[in-house]
Amino acid sequence: MRTRQLVIVASACFLLSTTWAQTGAKPADGQSLSVAASSASADSLLNGGLAAWSQIAVKHVALNRTPPLYDTDEPATLEISIVDVRLARVSKSLLVQLSWRDPTHDATTLAEVPNTPPETRFRKVQTEADDRFFDAAAVMFPAKSGSGAIAPSLQMGDVEHPVEIYYWNATRGAMVMQAQGRGTTRRTGQSFPANSTYQNGQWNVIFELPDLPAGTTVAFAVWNGSQKDRDGRKYFSVWQVLE
Amino acid sequence: MSRHQYAMVMDLNKCLGCQTCTIACKKLWTDRDGTGYVYWNNVETRPGLGYPRQWDRIGGGWKDGALQPSPLPTMDDYGHAWEYNYEQRLYEGKKQPVMPSPEPKSGCNWDEDVGGMNEDENYFFYLPRICNHCTHPACLEACPRKAIYKRDEDGIVVIDQDRCQGYRYCIKACPYKKIYFNEVTGKSEKCIFCYPRLEKGVVNACAAQCPGRLRFVGLLDDPESPVHKLVLVHKIALPLFPEKGTQPNVFYVPPFNPPKRENYGKSIQENPRVPLDYLIYLFGPEVKDVIVRLEAELKKTQEGGRSEALQLLIGRDAETRYHVRPQLVQIQL
Image 1 (cartoon, helix red, strand yellow):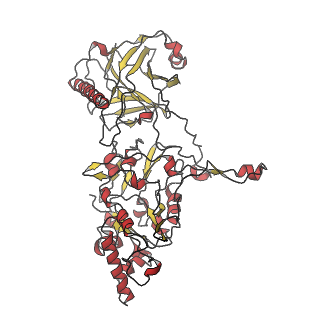
Image 2 (cartoon, chains in turn cyan, blue):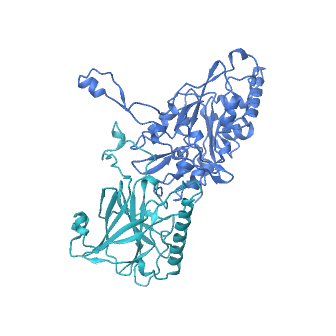
Image 3 (cartoon, each protein chain N blue to C red):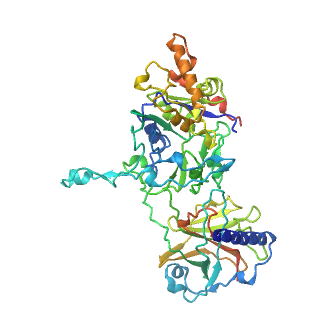
């Protein structure tokens, strides 16, 4: 029953946020994000550890669980309800730190694939497991910026309102994606600077994004590998507005 | 429905269990990084665990128009790859015997030739398996990326490796567990029915290499093709687990030989060595009719007559067994 209630709440949040996205209404005050202007370098924020971020204000952003997308989906409980967001603007980029509690560390180091063609090697790299999924997180924002622009659908935008997704995976690294609606997400083949640590049951992941102007809407997503999260099976926030 | 449909018939009475098809496929398509455990074609002993083990009992497919749930098979179900300590034994002077590590506990055709008992007599047969290139593929329906599609020109089901994101809903949905996840590429892959060969008029590698000559290939809708004749005219080949609802396009001539020891000369329907219930489990109740038809054809030849169906099943030459006609399926652009 509890799961059912959670699903209903998540569904309601999902629908509300989508409705808002479609109407283009402004988000409530609680959905704004302050951005610290930092004189630190992008490199020091990316690689300087938690201390580099200690002076930057944190915003606790609520996460929702997507409702079951397919009839055959296993039910999932809301295990991660908050993601802590810190933002810092440096000379030409926006640094975003996402932190969330996740007791299960779903990440591995995949065996390195040699540069030589597989047919020239006696031993091939093996698939170690076929049923594991890895922790991941993403920041999504409209591909077309501009103040007053209608926020895209939370479901990966739409044809008129494409989105950029900066996706980080605990095993496979950082990759830039683009989408124009649910099911259209594609990898651009590009990466972006990111750094991550996992300590005491907590992920801290830092994304280096292009400099997004004030008024830009951003949304966050977290995938929990141990809950078999992938695709739209995930945690998501509603749109937030950069101050 | 595709405009045409390539299909395969395998005569289980002729399968030797030699795995030549498996190796032909593996050398051609899955001798790559991440595909050690991947067998687009495998041959398993029946009754038996299958590969991945218990694939026939864990779920997937359709029921009342809805996809059915299924867990993902694990590497325990496929079997973990093992290596031998040759270096220690041969070069480092260690006295231990050469042993595999990790300890093998499962694998492709792990229970080879174990089979089952029918009263006091052992029985088993081999079941070669490839993707069924279903008319109503559950994998295609399950993929949120629309990475899986059925080729309109020939009905072959393929996974677009550019669109696939490795979500593995397809593996869960396939009731035959014939899609494999490659962790190195992060994508799922499956049998492509050797379409690059078919497009050049060359039959599938698994069929071409089969010493038992048990595979028949052609278009199901081509009246000249052996698969059309075996499935639709003579009606002696059936799909595997038809109740899973995917409408497979790989068909099997069920095993009906040899008879039990005391049954020589009697009807194969009388207390057969391979229990009828087991064949019904695999091929559905229609298998009873197929056995009757096969026995009638057998009787015809034993009485000096000629059976077209049996002549076709003998399949002496490639022209009889294969009817690959790329010009029939070519799309005019």
